[in-house]
Length: 406
Image (cartoon, rainbow, N blue to C red):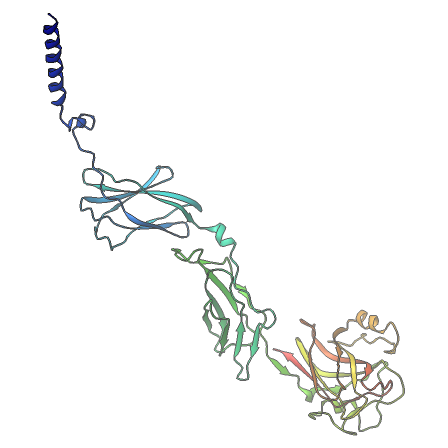
């Protein structure tokens, strides 16, 4: 009886084993509607090229010949774009430009699809930034060389100078008016610091605007919001000495003798002169002392003075240069050595154009700039404060020359 039970158990176990081994390996298809699970080949080497309100995604296609299209998803799958698969050559590049994006950092997912709708494993493109108005607002035009912005050359060409840009500068475009009254554009590359304009029309503005890219592979170039105006470019034109006239004012010093007049200062002599080819003051007073004259016309941008002393002695090494356009009721009735003279001059409308301090013996020509942006000037007063040799009464000079910025 026991053997009979054991045999039945063995028979049952064998039957179950046979039935179990009869299940097919493809029976999982009942869970996939009878279809196989297929993954088309995924793309490789994905990159993002940021742009202005847009982005371009690029990748190399899979060699899988079954792929018919690619789909790109972003905004957590809420937005997508379909690109036909036109090549399966892995050396080619597929490009997908997505416009109309806000300035933001995005993540994109790329899938490959075959004709049956099977899709590949996902390819992620993360930290893809789109640029726009916020980035543009941070851009500034390239800086000019503040210490030496331009040079007017002997041939009247103008060399403009800029400092090295501090970010990914692509170009700086300059626009100016040439001597034929035409607008001209020139470009300054980031590696260049100087640009020479051979046909610039003096007195006209030069505008410049810089362009940038946020990263080296950027899709678009960004421009600053507006152009800047280059510092005023001028050339120095010597004031016409033929128009200069003597003009004594209250408190001015007298002359030593008739042939050492103030007019000796614009007779065109070059270099330190000897007596009597000089201005020579009388000795009837002590420094500070003044002399005055009329330049014969109004100059709107008086810029430079050159003063030349005598060939030997009594040369001033400290003096003030004053200017005004109209002397009607503008001459204070005070001697220049009185303590309130300077304030009185200012109250009458005079402008202190320069306080000159020479550190030599005062003989040779000494040229120096006057104040920036002076008012219109026609009349000049020079107050002499000190002589290089310590003399306190006499003042000797050979020549005075002025230049106007035009």
